[in-house]
Image 1 (cartoon, rainbow, N blue to C red):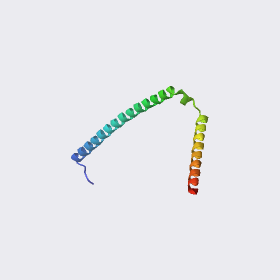
Image 2 (cartoon, rainbow, N blue to C red):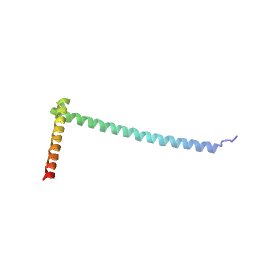
Image 3 (cartoon, rainbow, N blue to C red):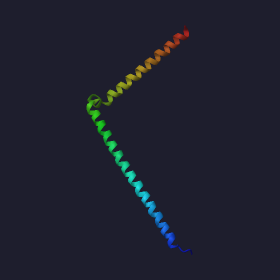
Image 4 (tube, rainbow, N blue to C red):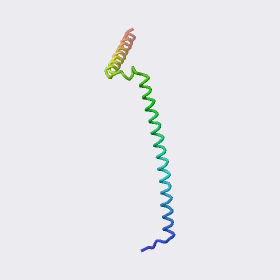
Amino acid sequence: MERTTTREKERWQRQIADAQLRSDTELDKLTKRIMTLERERNLLMKSIHQEKSYSPQIASSDDGDLQYLVSEIRQLASKALDESSDEEDINKIS
């Protein structure tokens, strides 16, 4: 059975203390980063809220209006594609 010398014990204690210091330092950095991110999130939420209050017509639009607009856009895009393919067919015949 090996005996642990006092010098080895002291070395281990120093290593543990160093690791604890690094851990505490890293924890402090992460805590500060979290606080910074929370402040940024709060500022963004405040900005979003202000934008919504400045644009009541956007905030008051319901899903039905948006679905109608999407449907209209799709119909126009489909019509444009049909017209362009008709033009290609005419050009092939000519």
